[in-house]
Length: 292
Image 1 (tube, rainbow, N blue to C red):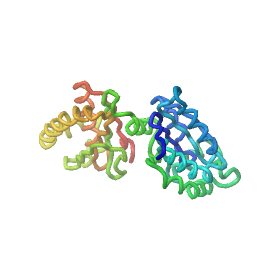
Image 2: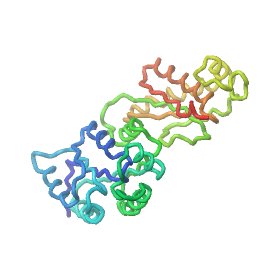
Image 3: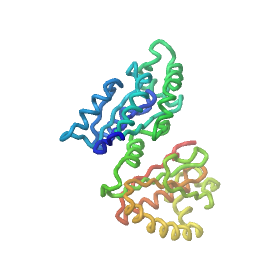
Image 4: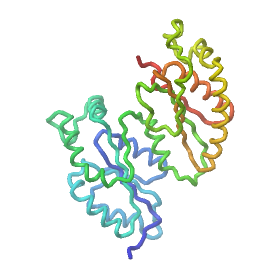
């Protein structure tokens, strides 16, 4: 039976070029991981032995490995399976993004794709996606970073990898959004407030937003909202201490209306004030406020 190297957890960070691996590596550094970037696959067995040497064990290690290392795709699967068979505690985090998002990021940074120095970026992205498919199939967790900024990605990493045993305050992220633009992918709890009267159809309110006092008065003065407000507050104040007890560090609460400009904004703003007055750490983002 294989020996179990239980004192050290090894995380492989991999995925498509431009998907956010560098930013994610910094997140893991902040979480206390010992991080190594662009480690050749052939050196993994030796590196693992050093990390698990008696008396010098490193509890959490993250290794960023990708297409930059020429033999990664060829060598890694066999090495990974062999190390797992020897009892090493391994997991794989795979990052990806849409062709559109990756093309935009390479355009913004003006860097060539590692597989397309003299070709269109999209060709390099397509080729890399095909080459990495076997690695992707081995992954324990896959994150699509297409619509995430670095702060949202950091929050998502913390949600997944912060040990539940660490006593940390619950950070609540409130997101107002419009259903016409899609549901926020990282929502833990979602409320649809499209049952409330829509200020969009009131001529003097149409061009305003849910942050305007007139719109807030229209939305929050509605009798159905007042009834819903009491039920919503009861539910949240019932759930929040139980999430803390579970060890949850981050909670994303999304409020949706049709366009994400009036009702959801006013209600998210109201909830932000309510939760802050109750002593909770709250961040509020109006995702679709300025969209047409």
